Length: 247
Image 1 (cartoon, rainbow, N blue to C red):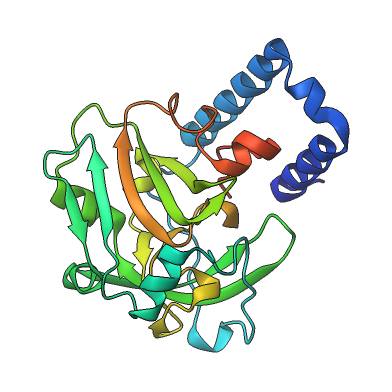
Image 2 (cartoon, one colour):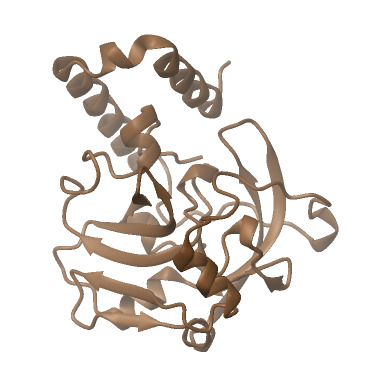
């Protein structure tokens, strides 16, 4: 039986080998996206929306935890933040909120903290277990006062692709999940650059490409229509990865 990760990887390979021309056809894309929406709705109906992923013991942590995606944004702006040990870094929380926020690392540390040892499953076919710590995204959103019309949360990052910030998104179900955190610590140390310093998303019920690194902005929206090409994430827009990467 082919697992979800294999299906995603296979789909990406097909897209890169030429099927992207077929997927680019509007009628075909509509069918694919409707199928994805149906899958997500079925997944939501069959599973507990608050179910937790397994958590592990310290002795089960992986001795090596590979990096995924960008290993260093490499921009002058990020280099300056890194040189200053991220003292000037701020995470903007805006969009459909009553109280927009601008949060420093010490500000994140003032929220109630969650520490969790979980498994990272990468679409490239590897997994690793590590410890993450940071405030729940739900607590940060509550502090900002999310409006009733909110449906998605969009994450923009310091690494650039084609000159534009990397981006990802989740719906409010995953945004408010108790294991979805804004992690500033990995394995009891501040995040290193390769793993997304100074802050990254951990959305534990999804494959690794949803775990956006180098966070700069969290925006609450009612639609993904104006985000990138409308599918809510860089890889979803450009390599036809599934927007819903639940595991």
